[in-house]
Length: 138
Image (cartoon, rainbow, N blue to C red; front, top):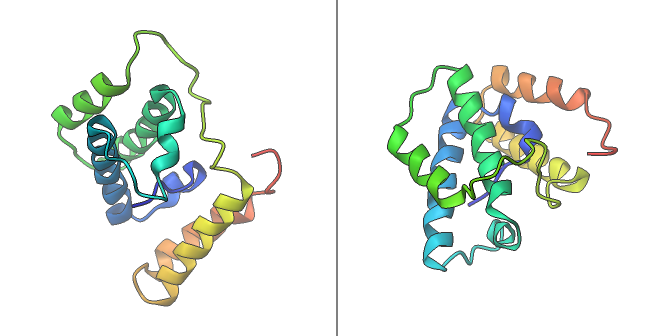
């Protein structure tokens, strides 16, 4: 279970983007039940749910951009769980999604490329995205 760094969402391979959508649903369900104990994602419980909703919207927007279909009932489920009735900035990001975490996610994706899980074409998109990252003021 992992929430990829938000800057990598636009370059995740399609299957990984869909998996991220499923992760969001799984995180929401565990969070709702009070069973969110996974060390890689339990930090979300320390934040206002609007942060999570903002992340969900980033994933959903990218899926829409790529014409990847999803069931509205899952979006509605996520939205109803997180929405507090007030508009919150789209710039809310988890503090954990910092320079260090961006690098960790990058190296995780690099390992997937090295093991043949990510194609060369997909990897080149990731590398191109990372070339533009300064790792400062994330």
